[in-house]
Length: 95
Image (cartoon, rainbow, N blue to C red):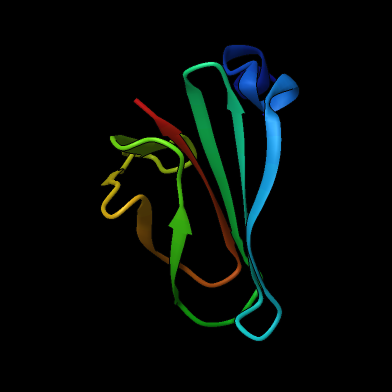
C-alpha cells in the first residue's frame, strides 16, 4: 500500500469527502480528489455482497487498484454502481 500512495499522491494530499456511510449495510466509501485526480475507497464490513451507489465528481472509467485483473467500472448518472464482496475493500482510480 505504501507504493500505491507514492504512485497516487491524491491518496495522501487530496480533499477528503465521505460519500457513503451505511451502518445497516456496513459499508463505507470516501472520495479523495486533487486537481483532475479522483480516487474512491470502498469498504464492505458485512458478511454479504453489497450493491451500492457512490457519487463521483467526474465521469469516466474507474479502475480497481486492488483487484488482480484491475477491473474497471464506468460512471453513470454522476456515480458508480458497485457490487462489493463480503469483508473486502476496493480502491477505484479514475483513468
